Length: 462
Ligand SMILES: [Zn+2]
Image 1 (cartoon, rainbow, N blue to C red):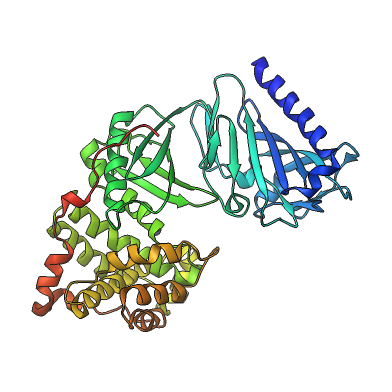
Image 2 (tube, protein in one colour; image 1 turned 120 degrees about the vertical axis):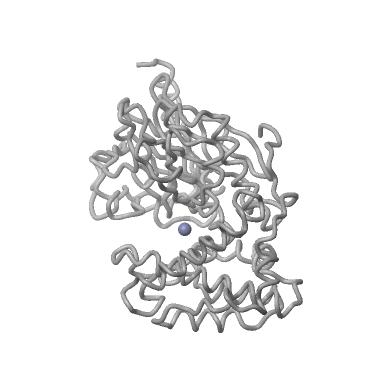
């Protein structure tokens, strides 16, 4: 085992104890300093956490599954009680330090050779409660020689700075032996953790750059400063799609998990919908499960419109895919109203119904905004204008809140009302506008290629 990290950890532990014993720190900003030592086989961690400037009464887990992971916890006063998603802390009026060990009981992915693992920080990060709103929190990661960490948060070397969201929502963390690259595009710093040699970095970078450029074209830049990608390639043999799966997580920073075929070409990866769909979610805040038809519908609509705009697929293919999707949506579902379908889709599998009913709404909204403004206003323009307001909404929000903002910034007065009709209907929406000769010119406008609006090259290293 590499000796350097032991020294680092020891120094950090001593420093922490010292800080915690100085009562003057209580007058300052509440601080949390976590030192996390990842086990050599990446299946757990030993965490030492010091809190000063406030006196938490216990540590809490962010989810019930992860709550099974601490095996033991202790402080300088002895063993601490671990139970029901919490670790009780010794009563203290000043700073306190605590240690605990966790096992990664719920891994997102582990490479076949076990040299790298993807987990949520829910597996190792327990938050102090009561949680101070102005907590200054950082995490120092120590790993064995040759291993590294890739996390979605702002960092300085191995020290990461955590916002509140990191303590409440999942993000993708990678620990182990893998490659990490970074670049900047469309005003966003990008870090990419790749858990396999193929697709090679140049291909990966070009694919992600195109996708970011397409999604950024909704406005002038992507609505996030930092993007963290976790690329988990799978054996391409027998895969029918270039990207098998994607998922965006926003726990204190945006991380996007993508599972591409190891044999996909750069053209295939660029033309695929998954990456653009996932990044399109960033134009809206997180919505409640009952309202996911809206976020999935807008992301699905954007994946087709943006690929046509940026020349990644033809307008005809985009319309064909929308027609096919709407038809699939009409044939699927459990016959209940859209908010119920939306709330339960992970259980019922009514994904087509939810995604494509939402897409029908996005299409109707875009058509009507364009028609009533004589082409001045579009759904994409409304999303861009709404972004500053939407980004200030705290936590998980209602569709109605989002739509009220979209109505206001677009100068329209029908989005909330139309969305309420979709949300409460058990019938699949009409797709008649697609065949209405009067809408033909607007449909052509929607899928018009505008490659100049799509950033297609890497700017520089961040
Ligand atoms: Zn989605």
